[in-house]
Image 1 (cartoon, rainbow, N blue to C red):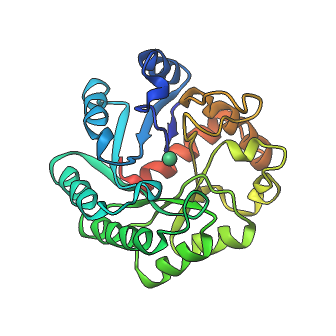
Image 2: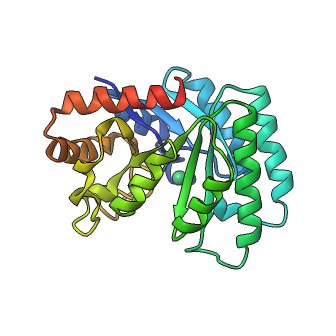
Length: 254
Ligand SMILES: [Zn+2]
């Protein structure tokens, strides 16, 4: 059995004391493909070191997270491209717009997002989108800027109408802990979305699925998300693993 955690930040400080155990737990519970979205250049060296240590299990993205867009964003975006040019990178991410933490810099968040869509297109890579309280803004940009190689709306937590709009753009949905939340809402309509459009993710260390909500999340917890999808799609655990991992291969090419 092979699960793919398409969005996990295991390189963050929250794992500094027990990272090897966390990775071994994931692998021994079948979550043996771990995709690391980037945040900014501060974490690049650590991400590259971990890729060297676990070359079969870890796959890296390069990108500037919208919450880290500031006046130095042009320099950061040069770094994003430099890393793509000299390393094995599977996607540009995570990129997008976040209006929950900061509304004042929307103009440069948009510029950074558009520039990174361009980089993804130039390098034939998919993108991984971070969208928080910004669906309309992001949708507008995706209508204006063609995304040639598709990608993922990470941690999808919108409504059915938004899900359909995303699929119409050729993008897929990253489904995480929110699907297990009592008030998460997406579990009510996900069965109307063909499972070929879904990949799994934990967003570790954030967004622990129920019943672990509030605790540090880790990639082994994919099983709680997969169990919920068994109910929603009336499929076996093995089928959920096979289908969602196959979907991740189709999108990311690895
Ligand atoms: Zn993330």
